[in-house]
Each structure stands twice: as C-alpha cells, then as structure tokens.
Image (tube, rainbow, N blue to C red; front, side):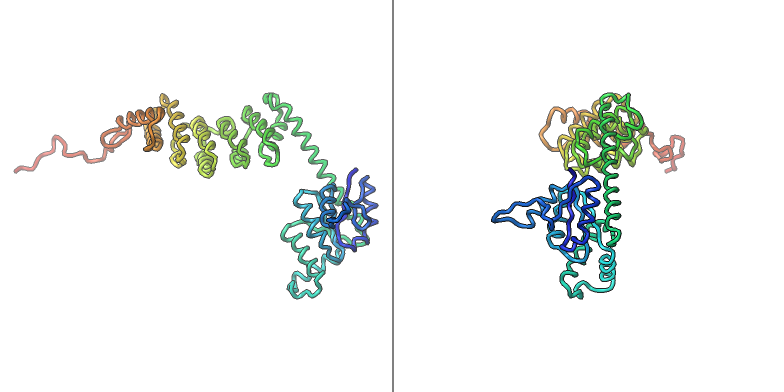
Length: 383
C-alpha cells in the first residue's frame, strides 16, 4: 500500500483528520507521529530523530505542513532526510502564516523578531523557499483538503508520465540491435536516452550506437554527448564521431569545440580517440584545427603519427602537407627512440627535404612581384 507521511509541528493536528480523509481516498495509508503511526524502535538509545529518519525513508511521499508553529525534528531532520534520499515531497503552508512571513522578511530584520519560535520558523521558510527553491503552496482551513488533493493528483500525473517515458524507452531499446527498423519516434526516444545523465550507461551506449548507424543526430546532440560526465559515453561518442557528426565539410567551430573538450579532459583516452576520428571526418580541416591540440602525452603523439601515416598517399595539397609536417614535428621529442618514432622522424625528414630552399612548401610559387635581381637586358652603369 502507498504510505504518505504528514510532517509538521504539533499544530498539524488541526488538519490531520482532513489529511487522512484525502489520503485514504487515494487508497493510501497515513503516517503521522501524533497518532503513533510511524516506524519506531523503543530501546535504551531510541530517539525521535532516528525514528523520523526511518519513517521518511520508508514513506512513499512526505507532505510537510506549516500551520503556525516551528517543529525542529520536522525541518532539521525529516526535511533533510527527504531531500538527501530524493523522496517526493509537498510543502503546504497556512495562507495567514505565509503572508506574515512575507511581510516580516520584507520589513523587519530577522534579529528584531523577539519570539524564538517565530524567528526559527521564518529562517526555515526562507531556507525552504529562497535557498532550496522549493515551492510552498498556501492553503486555508477551509481549502486544505482540496489543495492537498490537487497536489497529490499533480504528482500522480507526473508519476504516470515517467512510467510512460520508461515504457517508450523500453520499446525503443528492443530495436537498438536492428537500427534500420527504428521509427522516427523511436530514434527521438533513443536520443533522449543517450543524453540522459541519470540513465545507466549501458542503454545510453546502445542508443548511441543505434543513432550512429542511422546517422540520426544533429550537432547539438553530438556536443551534448561529447560533454557527458560518463567516461564510457564520452569515449564511445568520440569513437563513433565520423558517423554521429554528418556535416561535410566539417564546421571549423565544431572541430575547435572537440579539441577544447580533449584539452580540458584528464582522460588520455579522449585525445587518443579524437585524433583518428577528426582526421576521418575531414583530413584538411582536422590537420589545420589540431594545431591547438595538446600532445603532451606520449600515447597521443604516437596515435597522431600512426593515424597520419595511413593518410600519406592522400596528401596532395601543399598546405595540408605543411600542416602534417608541423604535426609530425610536434610528435618528435627527446625521449628514447621507438619504432613508430623512427618512422615518424624519417617521414618528417622526407617532407622537410622536399621544401624549397626559400622555405616555401612544395607547389608554392615565389611572389612574381618580388624583385629577384637585375634583368639580363638591363644596362649596367658605365665605369
């Protein structure tokens, strides 16, 4: 059975019967400390705080009610427990008390409020509404039942919507291994799964693979995936980047964003995966963009060389050749020579040897307007 907990000071007894009637109308049970309907253990070290925390954890919903008085266990123990455990909650406040709180906070310094109970209640309401930004719903004695019923109905609707979303995701998840059969609606659902940071990483990765197989992503979705806090999701996104990002030629701002993500990351696997992905997307644009890519990690330098090496036969543009030569130079350090580095050094030297004596890259013409010395038919001054 659904269990709803009424939380508040002793003056909540004024609305307890109405609370019970509404809750039972939903087919739920009522927990309230004034009637002893809470979870408790009586022993030498028993405490109200412990009993309250246990009850909050076991309840399905907590309804916090402010009438006129302050209850320390309610706000110092039960509210904090509900928030820390993610318990659904509603906060209701008597309209007269709420108006008094608003008036005092606007016109009277807190230190000037002499009544300690009222002062602590004002502090609590300020914490709830302003600091934690929880919604406080006013009620009057004549409308408490109706207000509570509407709030419960709203939460019930939210719960049904989440159940509907879960069912949609489960239906789409059954088709992730057959991406060609996915409908547009199912692809949209998988996109939601892919970027949902609260979702388990396994269905997120299945969704990303299906989206990549269909090329069913836009640039914003790819950027969101690249920024994921889940390492496995971010790495997979980079590996599948040539399929996820379908814009050709690649946008320079997008490439710059990818490189910025890699430079900020403490995961060396991000840079290592990004290098072949960007080069596959757009060789010339990637070579130009990767001038700002950090290559402090030896594995990244090796990956850079080995990937560029696979494109050697496709290097025809002198500007790209010069960019590759510069990247190869960055891959060479004073560290011990490895097989890949020896090949990298040899290639770098081959490209350097093909440069014109004046420093121009192959295919570059000297400036035709540049004065190269006296013409053959120019008269020499007589001696």
